[in-house]
Image 1 (cartoon, one colour):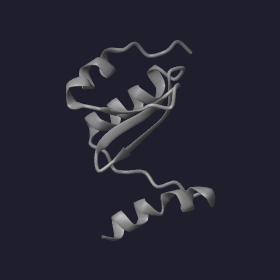
Image 2 (tube, rainbow, N blue to C red):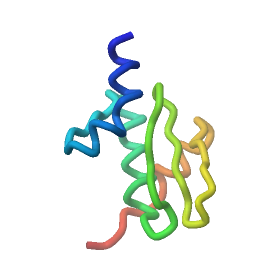
Image 3 (cartoon, helix red, strand yellow):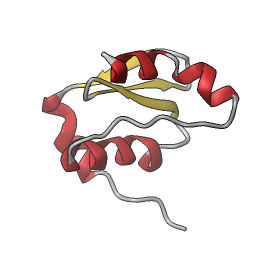
Image 4 (tube, one colour):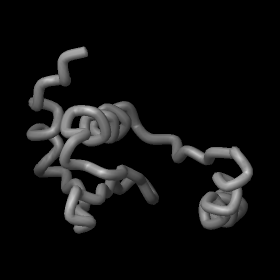
Length: 81
């Protein structure tokens, strides 16, 4: 219950410079970072809630990354530095 209460208050904490991150499994963390970094021009923001990864695209449409899509995100090339 404490965990859920802290996560619900994360927006208020973020305004004070405190960031609360969900503890993701290794595969979820890798997919999360793939969504966040591999298509940064098309993805505005990425977040997770209860292990589910979601993102907002450039048109402000929210998408949920389904298990079937994980391999697609993992196979995308990393951007050149």
